[in-house]
Length: 177
Image (tube, rainbow, N blue to C red; front, side, top):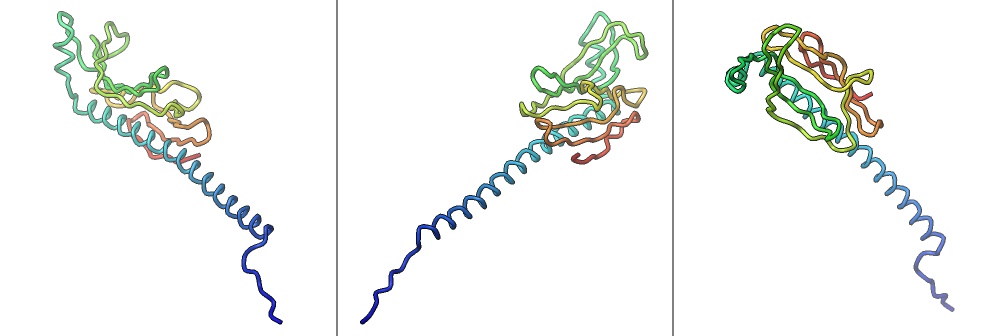
């Protein structure tokens, strides 16, 4: 007599297979979230470094110095620097020309002419190491930088990328910490 053989899987085999598939999918999703968070920080770092390099270049060539002299008449102002600072309320980095009536402290009148801005993801923050707010000025005639230091860009404190702005104005590449 022939015994009819049943084809298929038992309930235990199905549960084990589904469990393994769920563990693999969960690991993949967690890895993707970590990758996405790290990429968000990297994009913010690239944008901020681009803005800082633009400020550095504009200061070196004295770009738009004429607008300082003509925009604020009757007072004649001159271009002091290009400044990048972070407005923490809006999480926006702002590049502006700094016009003043004197090149050396103490300054009298100081005016800011906004040139461009970048908006960070709401979960990304940038600051000078040690807790200071990001406020860097690339000096036009004198050269150098006011506000030099190590810049930390992080996302919810989980991923932090550090890079340095030297007092001579060099923007040095950094790394994730």
